[in-house]
Length: 465
Ligand code: 4AD
Ligand code: MG
Image (cartoon, rainbow, N blue to C red):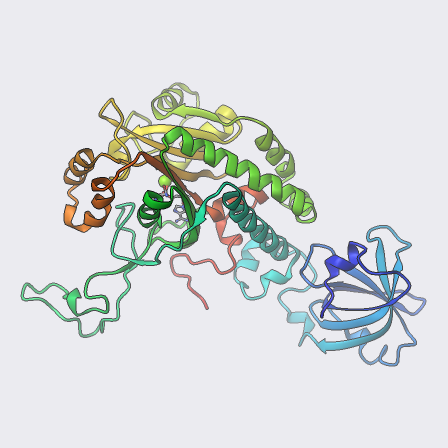
């Protein structure tokens, strides 16, 4: 089977023996002495391996000297300890087979020079080949694996919640419709409204904005569960932290309250960021050097300090009394804007902060009403540089209070009969949260825009391939 360059650089193969690697050319350099140096990478790690190619190879002039960034090759040679600095090993090539040239290297969009992140975004099909694109992809994978490992080690079950649903979990009306109706010839009821009983599911259906309501059903049976998958929001937010399609991690814990959910969120973030620093030191060193000089120190500090927890009401007081002039005025009851969240996280504490107990009027119907009757047991985790990365709550487990909330918010209890059943049959206190996976990756790498941490970003007016 094909050998990965990661394993070669890790010293897993004997020196002074023949080896064959496959990959793409990062750079080619030719010495006056008639030797070429090829840096070959296969994406398995940040680093490339150097192949030293002598000019007596039979295809040296014809082929080796035509290699440019992005060409694919199979290189055979002797693995030796490297004399120069950088890698510990290199290959003294005895054969270079060209698998694919780059047509017209002058116009190859991923040529070996620094590209702006905006330019790379327009080349979504090629950007994984760049140093940045490769590093982001490996970091994303490491974080996803660490998330599953964290929950597995803690005894949580991974639940597949549906992507197609009839429920608007967040009640924000930001759902994409799923329909097979003929748009040019929509069936109508007597009242002239679109008749969704004619549609595929026999009723209106949408892409999910959150797996929470569904995962609550499994929480009410298996106690500790989580879902981790894509979610969709048709919010017209052209910002650096919103995607129309993003991934969410949503644990749900039975016999638990808000502070249990906050503890779990804090433990999870620390666990996965520690795993990232340990497992992807190569890529993190690159982000530190190229993207954000403080990123590694920032993550280390986060791992080793307790998160500050603060009530919404206290946060409002801090915002009202600080020197900063905000574009959006502050008063009790407002939904915090990104500028407020960032002030609290960046300037007030200088680290992630857990804000709790928000006014009920700005939060979803399922959040548990507090004793004061005006706040709910909600929490958001706000991170420097990005703002909200986690939103969660203790859920309303009391049927009468839930029903009162539904009617207060003009929601039809019939639409929530299955959700109400959970409260009718053996209800338990429970709590959970949702982590925006792309926001976590942005925070963990220092990359400013969530569009650059998902392979194929979906945003308003952009659903290319
Ligand atoms: O705060 P949100 O809307 O919470 C929920 O959906 C709950 N049902 C979660 C739960 O309790 N199980 O979203 C959760 C997180 C946000 O904190 C944010 O990080 C991320 O999802 N998020 C987005 N990420 C990228 N693009 C968007 N458009 C996002 N909207 C929310
Ligand atoms: Mg939220």
